[in-house]
Length: 478
Ligand code: ARG
Image (cartoon, rainbow, N blue to C red; front, side, top):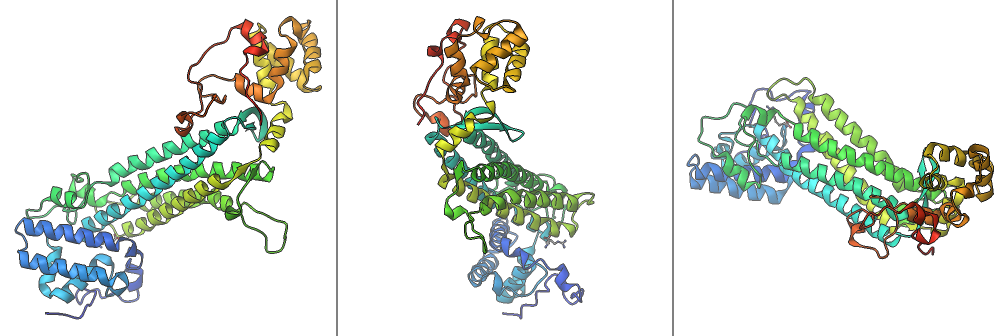
């Protein structure tokens, strides 16, 4: 038995839609959950048969129809208010009225919430994988640059010398927390609302744990009213994606600035050019990565604004909450992939970085630390170095400043070699060996892959040791 698909299995002859028909429909956007809805339909039908709510023949016919509908694809669905209704109409058109038994003991409310969660799991895992690839690119590049000295900045001014490895690993650590937040969100996405029906449960003896198991969920959302109402799993997911996009925007901004200074060279694959200015090589991909935070923040804001103040239990507003999730997860995953590719293929100009690290008296803090370790109160040492910063920032300027501030020669406290070492960016980096600091290890260790470049043991040097340059760890500059 076969009927013309009407797409109106829910409304029948009433509410056939007038001018608002298109406005009501989510069918086009629902392509995203076409496969999810088929999976949800199958699990539900299998459970209904196992529970004796459908007989085996009815269930078999519906399952066959679902296979055929899958093979024909989303575009072949009859017109309808949404994918759930359209698939149901297509089942009925193949199986006959008995096909309508598929919708026993459920509602589109629990159905759509289950479909979104089912599909979002896959998308979150894609986002997680993108973060892993980015972290690998950061750690691998860091491993090659444990000894590459670069300027570290605060307020965009040279602040203290550091290494490219330390810089890149700072982002690897940040992105590792983004991975963790995505996985955390995944845990709560991975719960089944199916069987909650409209919101109030059902008279049928459904087995909610069974459909959850068939669909690979970790368990069910207990309260049926909560199960259909909540979209907090979208809020969590988009918050995690927003945090990730914000991390990426900072990384992109840095790399754009470094490229602008000639310290990083982006590969052509991740650059663009000007349609008029032939000499230009622009960091367009990273600018788009930077801009993606706007999409993510907009998506989260749009979602929260849609959800705010919604009464229990289901309201059609929820239909417009979902696209925020798809748009955000797509934009952020793609930006993460691109950021990973840009990092993996960029080259760091060691000479330009070393030159830049010598500019702006970026070793000033290390000199103040040296004086402080030699008995000068840090605040006084700070004043000595600040005074010298205005008059040359070299050994002579420091000595003159010491005479002015301390009333005695600098060399009453430190020897010339120790001072010269403290003024050297590479040695300045090597001497800052506190936990989480950046000195290169003698050979790259797996710790770089884990995102930290730290010395294995923390050791406090004595004042006497600090007076001798030989005690300051030295590493080769390439
Ligand atoms: N397309 C709808 C959505 O995305 C499906 C649920 C419709 N439920 C209803 N009671 N009208 O939310």
